[in-house]
Length: 113
View 1: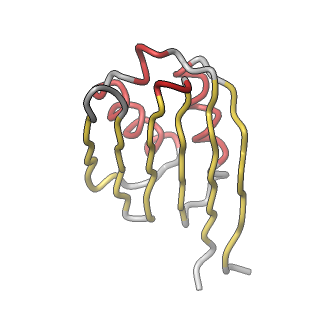
View 2: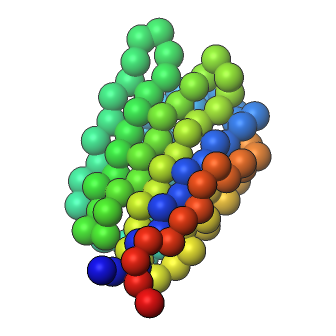
């Protein structure tokens, strides 16, 4: 089995305008994939009414999913990657973009040597 890193995190105290900007969030997913040297296949997103959104970057190496909670100024992030870089970099990158603070809920390596 390949080495897979599973990261689940919450980014709190985010910039509310950024959390609601679907174009920015899709671009953030694309930049995160590039940062990690991962192959982006497709990005899919859905904006909810009156607020919030969900987006997924489908990667050749797995996925990055986000779910925003504007009422709590937070975003839930899940990264599954069999890439070589540490997936925690995605959370740090997103926190910088959204002006928030990272709380890692789970960081697990599955398989590999």
